[in-house]
Every structure is written in structure tokens, then in C-alpha cells.
Image 1 (tube, rainbow, N blue to C red):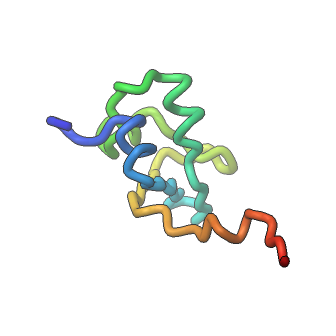
Image 2: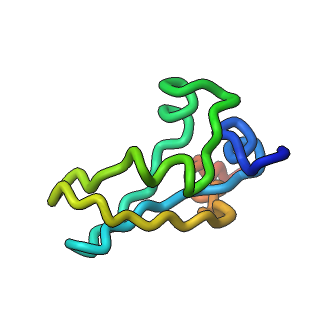
Length: 84
């Protein structure tokens, strides 16, 4: 990882990326596996790489922020609980 994260590295590290529109204030968690499949596993995925190509899907605004954070969603809640 010389110049920042790639899509595959973000996925393997359990990171999530949320895009936010500064114009309409909407936020959306990016689908990293879909972006990896579209642009390639080794494609750069840092803010300075992605932001120039992004726009808000609601208002069309180009003033986008990206927030990178560890994915802390509780994965255990999605499993069935079996009582014995």
C-alpha cells in the first residue's frame, strides 16, 4: 500500500466508506465489492482518487466528502440463534 488503499485492501481490512453530499446533506455507504468488480481490485480507492469522479445520486452535486472507518456492524446478529 504505497499511495493509499485499493478497493481490495479496504475490503480485506474490514473498512467501510461513506460518501456525503455537501449540497443536500445525504449520506450513502459505498458498495466496495461492486466498486472493486467495476474498477479492479488494485484500483486506487483514496478520497483524492474517487472524489473527482463522484456526484450525488439525488441532487447531482459534485461537492462530495468521503469518510473511511472500520466496519463495526455486528455480524453475529445476522446469524440464526439455535437453542438446544
